[in-house]
Amino acid sequence: GIQVEQSPPDLILQEGANSTLRCNFSDSVNNLQWFHQNPWGQLINLFYIPSGTKQNGRLSATTVATERYSLLYISSSQTTDSGVYFCAVETIGNTPLVFGKGTRLSVIA
Amino acid sequence: EAGVVQSPRYKIIEKKQPVAFWCNPISGHNTLYWYRQNLGQGPELLIRYENEEAVDDSQLPKDRFSAERLKGVDSTLKIQPAELGDSAVYLCASSFGGQTGYTFGSGTRLTVV
Image (cartoon, rainbow over all chains, first blue to last red; front, side):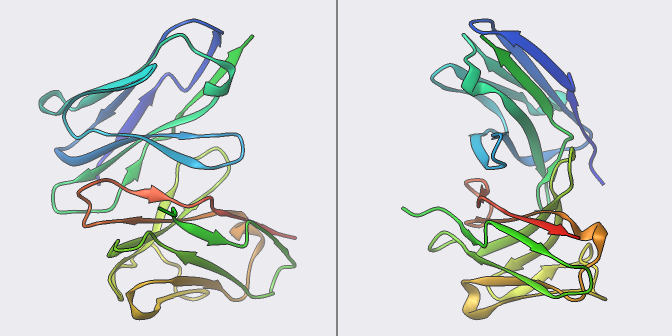
């Protein structure tokens, strides 16, 4: 099956700093989503982005499908950004979402 | 619009006891998924429904797990009997043909003691 690798596994930031999270995947995809899992376990959908670039406030994401990677940018980080960020992909043929192991982000004041 | 609703939010049971989880997907979403998330890991699929039909249940431990989706709307996931290793968060998600992405519920955190 498809492999999804996220980096870095852990990240500690000072409040106000910027960061880039990366997701590499091993096969062609027709769906890619970025999720934020907050400390209470809720998975919040950040972006549905099988290709291209999207922005939502301080967050933006870019997927280069031909090179099989996606990037999540967080600017001016806040303590509420803390949690685990997951990348998940769905391959052509509509296999269900496969998740990476996540990037654990801690933003300190 | 209400999101994906799951209940209960938390459940603590003794091993060998049965347990059931309930999920109400977003209205109009024909595809429903149950995922299990172990501590420190990403969610992993247990079963996928297209309307009322289970189309992918290869990862569901069928000796003790069962699921149903009545009338293609609500779904229940059952474990009988529960084992210590079943302690995890059980997440339900729904999508509309996969065209707009998945929406997850808040999950049920199961602890088996």
